[in-house]
Length: 307
Image 1 (cartoon, rainbow, N blue to C red):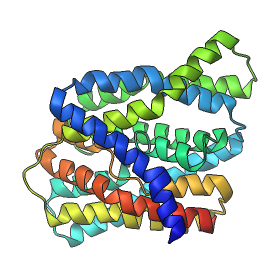
Image 2 (image 1 turned 135 degrees about the vertical axis):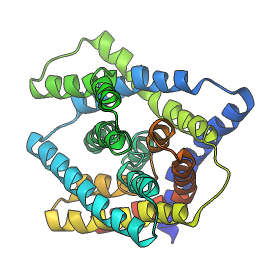
Image 3 (image 1 turned 30 degrees about the vertical axis):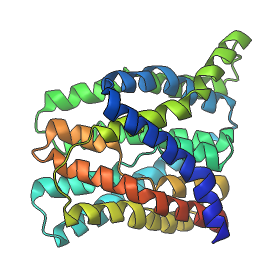
């Protein structure tokens, strides 16, 4: 019990404070959330991803293994959550949103700060996290839109747009510079370090601002079920798959902890544009984020003991 309280006080509570600050300030000043998102996507995240990969000791065979694991985990999540959605007798639109809220978890705005605090800025642990962030973003803006939209032009533009984002090039260049051991001039690394150090405070603030912009009028039982599925069944499945795959140590810990993240705000944003019931997605994001304070602490505690 003492370990759980220590994790909550030193990892989750600081995150809650920053997210709450962003939430309150957004309600008071009505900041432009689009501009805030651009600040993260085009400024701090690319520098953060590049430096995390550039400085880490990457085993590229492990890199491929992680991507394979995440793909299999996504397939298993799809099958299990689609079965639960059918059991709850949801209509087709809600089944898709129920499933997507479990497939797309907040590996970035929430998962990256958690990883940084849990592993004390360990470059290797963060490189695993970065792989998960990139996988989630590409998956959300490809399958996430494919599943809700019938217009190929809109889906294609969204997917192509991802490859125009600086986050993608931060990943590609970080891997390239690491693999070929390419040196970066000291003034550039100093600048990138300053940008990277701003990341946690900015992305958590933005998460709070995004949550403040989520609007819904009711709370449905199936949204609560989707939240529990994301926060409880998700990490339970990840644990079984990690055990069977033989992935251990820091890699397994980072993956298991991130598998416990709440539904991504992206799932609500995509639903606002492509779904007839975006309020349902918003309910799941809000509810899973609130409940995650307890469940993520528990998963962190378990991950540290088991792996």
